[in-house]
Amino acid sequence: MKKTSIKDIARLSGVSVATVSRVINNNGRFSEETRQKVLQVIEETGYQMNFSAKSLRMNKSFSVGILVPDISNHFFADVVQKIEEILFEKGYSTIICNTARNFEKEQAYLKMLESKTVDGLIVISGADEFGLHLNDTEKATPYICIDREPKERDKTIFISSNHYQGAFEATEELLQNGVKTPVIVMHKRISSSSKERLKGFRDALKKNSIFEENILKLDLQAEDSGVRIEQYFKQHTEVDGVFAINDSIAMELLLALPRIGKQVPEDVKIVGFDDTPQARISHPTLSSVRQNSDLLAELAVENLLEIMNNPAFPKGLEKIVPVELVIRASSRM
Image (cartoon, rainbow, N blue to C red):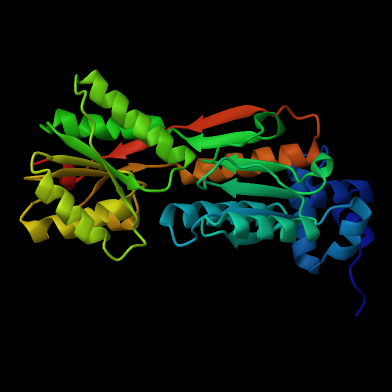
């Protein structure tokens, strides 16, 4: 059976071969009507592009690497899935690398991605600022950072949720509902997003004339994280509100506090961050800050493709996405 060629697609669509090529590569001018006509013929004929030949011809791999610090984290997994879906629709495959917040593992993945000549890279969160430490920085892979400060702002675009806004509003929610002595509970490791959340917490305290801050740092990977929570609240009986830097920590609090006779929200009010599915079914249900993962994914892909396809595209930009505080039972009586 004869394979359908791009010339056949052009003939059946009633357009030129060049137009078919522009539609396939999503590059250049063509009307939406023409695009739909060409795509319909491609679907009807079962036409398949030879990506190997196409990659050689265009000097592109049509693949994008994604560095993610913890794929088991609901927010990270949600963003990665949405990025992958958008890239797939645009003809790109993805290589997802779970770094486990390990610098050596991240560097090994970067070298692997470089060897596979990925066209671009999306870096999601992480403990430190991100910078490429590869051999040829002049030919370094174009990249976008989500929630992770790039070391060289002039070489990329930084996309982030408004972590400061979310933390500020979460803390205000606690204070406006009677909390007198709030604590922020966070990871021991520091990231770009956690720094902004801590800053939002502190500024909300200052606005409300509270000048003594309480900070509890946990390692959720440690088996004694629940015990540490219990010990802290036994020693700090005055604490009556918690801003948990993410919902995983908030869930630990919901489990640990009743074990020492503290009820939520009667004795301790809690607000989390990320609005994971568990927040809607926990007992009590958890107030939490919701990030716009759809918009983060769209902006990341849109800007990465711009940088990849247009070297003159302006970099050094920062795009901040608003968040939304979702109120549930854990922060109000």
